[in-house]
Image (tube, rainbow, N blue to C red; front, top):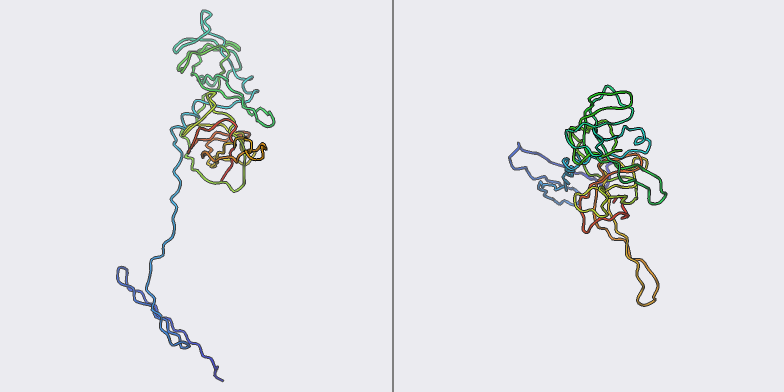
Length: 279
């Protein structure tokens, strides 16, 4: 038995060789007996180019001359006793003495000066101590726990109690590409190296979040400045204005408890204590 309603759709599609004009597609419906002519069209899709990597020269320079050490690492590191003839300061090319547990298979050391302690602003937990490289030295001889070294490089005069660590060789820093995180992480600007209080475009800041909080290299964080507290002019109630977004930074080196980030945009100077959160 024939169906009372017969639906027949014929599709005719043909494409000619590349570069030729594509033939029209014709769709004919027996129900409506209408013809609709379709022409090939270019379909536009939004393509977002990949983000550019962070400037490697800035990162390389920082990592080659800075480190975060624990108190235990500082206590265990050899330290400068002083120069020959009782001199307290040592310059490039001078011989000096240091005391500690030296690794005899290593003759080249970096000389680091302990500086700012990184403390969690909420709990007071010590994350580590910032140590900046102020020079390098080569061992001439070792007598027990005392070594004689020659200063082979210096950015400042070497002082007593400066610490000696094996040279921090980061090689060529792997490119770091900004990216977003899936999980929400909030923290604070912990410090600006060199003891500064404010940071701007392409400056480096320390954050009180690290790998144990889920932070990793490349994470992009928004920086917010706390809103001011004011009195409402009508009610005279004390109130706080909303936090303002003032910049973006990208994390480039992470420790367990803290990390370093590079400021990528700054509408105004970033300040220690500013809040950070991933977008």
